[in-house]
Image: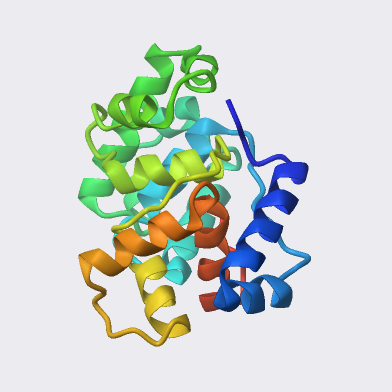
Length: 208
C-alpha cells in the first residue's frame, strides 16, 4: 500500500510542480511544510468530528478546550466524561453523540487500525461510515491525515473548493466538471495538491 513517506512527498511535489503552474507557486511558497500524521487513529477521527461544518479556527478552539479537560484524548477517556463536560468545551449535542459513538467503536474494535492499514481506500470509507457521525468527508480526512494515502480528493470540502476558486480565479461554487478535471489532473497525488491548497488559505497548517 503506497503512503506519503518523505520520499513520496518529494516525488509528488515534483510531479505537481511540472503539471500545474498555480500549484508550483504555492508549493514553492510553503516548500518547508508537509503533511504529518500523529499516528493516532482515534485522535484523527475525533478531531475530524470536531471540525465538521465549522471553520478551522473554531474547530481548534473547541479541541484545545477538550485537550485541557482530559489531557490525553482517547476512547477510554472520552467515555469517562459526562455529556455536559464535553458540552462545556463547545461541542454540540450531535457532535457529543458522534464522539461517544466513535469511542465505543474503538473500545470494541481494538485491532481495527492494523486492518485499515492493509485495506484499499474505499473499503476503509465503507467501514467508517457505518459509525454514526462519520460521513465520507470525515473518512477522507482520516485517509489523508492518519493513513497518509496519496490520492484522496475530498470533493465536498468547502476549504478545498474555495482555495481552488481563489487560486485559479474560478467562480464559486465550482461546476462538477471543473472539480472532476482537477481530480484527474492531480492524480495520483491529489492528497498533496489538496494539502497545499488548504495551506494557501490558512496561516497554520491544517492538522487532524
